Figure (tube, rainbow, N blue to C red):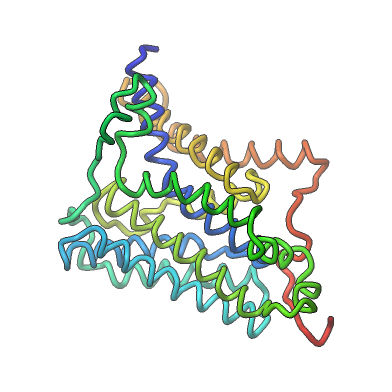
Length: 309
């Protein structure tokens, strides 16, 4: 393989991994608080749809991102109400949100199918840094949302491990009763983190329709929301690992695309399956390495009832 091919592949891995990173980071935050959100796919779709519509309507990709944030957060708010207030089964609620988001995005975007985006996030070469051999072309010739993700991951890691609020976030996922006993509003904070997770999933969707493939197509996430959920297990609920995993999965996706461009005699269907096959293999290997245990937060998926404390 030539150096140009490798550089192109790694740069594409960053691009293709970015929507996974936003969605996975939001899911890490949500699950650290003790709530499973299987509605990520639906939130990404509604984010992609509303982001595209708003971007075209206002002529600004940032307007699209803002709309996607609001749409993802509102869908997450439904999930929060069902799981935190009504203490509904978190898996069932998440699946319902995904189905609702899928249907709603299809309905709202039916008049925009196949249209190109009028406002997109273009590549921006960072002065000086983009001139660094190899690294510059890979990391610093990307779009604005990629650069924001570079800062978002260390910010999340700092919040998780270096702040008092982050300590309470991690504790909620392990023992919400202890956090409640310390005078912290578990219900309010779970609402907050679920909504933040949904907002990030919305941004992930907007990235697809405004940067990665600037257009709107029904179900354009193509299962990336489910990969993001699986990535959380691979990342062991850590932001840095989520970043590495997202770029790894993005690289697998990019590899399939580049092999098709090079005319490698492999079925396109097989190449398109690579990210999903790799997802299953990684989960099997991670669980096998940990003896069948996923090291998930102990209270993950369990509704908290103050009366049972």
